[in-house]
Amino acid sequence: MSNDRPSSDLTVPAATGAVSARGDVPERFENPGLPPHQPRRADSEPAADKRAERQVVALFGVSILGTIGVIVTYFVYPHDPSIESMRTANMLLGIGLFLGMFGIGAAAVHWAKTLMSDHEQAEARHPQRSDAEVRAGALQALSDGAQDSGIGRRGLLKGAVVSAVALAPLSIAVPLIGQLGGDWDVSKFRHTMWRSGTRLARDPSGTPIRAADVTIGSVYHVIPEDLRESDHWIEEKAKAIVLLVRLDPQDLVESDERRDWSHEGIVAYSKVCTHVGCPVALYEQQTHHLLCPCHQSTFDMADGAKVVFGPASRALPQLPITVDDAGYLVAQSDFHEPVGPSYWERLK
Amino acid sequence: MKAIAARRNHRFAPVVLLALALLVTGGLYAAFAPSASSAQTPSASDVEIGSRLFQANCATCHGPDAAGRAEAPSLIGVGAASVDFQVATGRMPMQMNSPQAPAKPPQFDDEQVRQLAAYVASLAPGPAIPTAEQVDPELGDAANGMVLFRTNCAMCHGAAGKGGALTEGKYAPTLEGVEPRHIYEAMTTGPQSMPVFNDANLNPEEKRDIIAFLAEQERGAAGGAELGSIGPVAEGLWAWVVGIGLLIACAVWIGAKSS
Image (cartoon, rainbow over all chains, first blue to last red; front, side, top):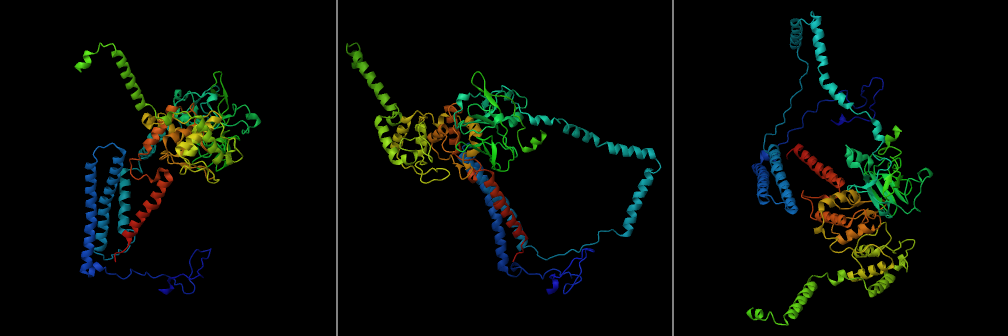
């Protein structure tokens, strides 16, 4: 069938969408049928037949050995809690289970392919449409049923059944939608639990931090001191986590309105990346760069945590801090902008 | 025994007893006292030899008075801990300029490192080398160490301490096989890109807990092959390339005709 290949002058007229044949392309392709049957070597050569049988037996044998291996491993490493023996046991159990299952599957496939009958069989498609008599019978049955129910005559009954069926799903839908609407208070995404006077505390111990303890080059992972008093402290922590560093005040670049947000070179920034909200905490103290591990957004801690690289589109929100009478670091207020991914910035 | 008991009221008995008691006490002290090298305070000669080692090996970059130059930081006030970490892990002297000084076989023996540390510590007070007890993993609480490691260290060094990449060719090195002493010193001094975790941030007991957690990691995972423990990228690569590749190979084999 050398003329099966469509030639380059095949065109599709835009108006009809039909394919028109030109040159050596036929009007209609003939069904090429099945390729000629190729007998397998196992069908004609007894030696090949025996070999295939041995291969199948070997694959089943692999499965048996794997299962025996699992049982032996189970008893050799009974209840030893040491990591080394658990690791060996897990490895052996895994390999044994794999061989036990895969051996059976591979043997079955190989058996079917080499030894079972390989006659190609084709089943022609039949039309999906039933014949006229069956179709008429089905319609008759439907109309008989409708006639018998009297739904055409009894209007009230018809209304009742339609109403009941239509209302029934409400018993599921109403509670579902009601729960969805449980909390539409979007404004809470704009605030964290930092308040004026909240002490900055170490994560996870919750002990407050003295300004004098934060030496240059130090990094503190910070939570609000009263975090555990919150009813939903994990949710609150997710919003309120802060990274605290101290820089040489000479290195610090501060805008005029933020000049009193830091304390002697100590600055605090939200630890939630403004890209998609990963905890951004890889602080390189020599370059003052803060790297987000998820998408490599990099923020310059010395310059208002501005983005210097990566997909984040705005600087990390800064937490205004000062010190209280006892020398502990405290927040001046909440963040002045929503923390987290840039989406929330639009709520402002 | 009877002969000794008969003389217990002899007038020299207290003297003999006292001499015996002193002998036993002295012997026990000699047997159990900390060895001379670990408890020794640096002598003037250590500082002197250290100074000469410094002039010969370090002064080119750090300056003859260790005050630093454009390319190398001042070493005044970095303390003995910093010198012990940088020199005993082979990071210093640097072989060439690169984003980060890698660990390599150390160029100085323990004695020379001690002398260099003594010299730098004599310039200004700084963090000291921790004692053996401060870094003994046996004395730490690995569970508390895990909590602290997860908060303070895991973002750079990875959850299992196997290291990770930073920016512009810098990286957090693996903590596998690092001596506990050097882990402690890195926390107190903050070498290179690493921030400082001073005793107010992580107190000495907490540092020891972290060391105990890392010692637990050395024993490996219970779950079989770790694939380097460097996180989801390596595991995903195996699942997608090797795992799915094998599944496709099986599908092709099932679909192929037998010869």
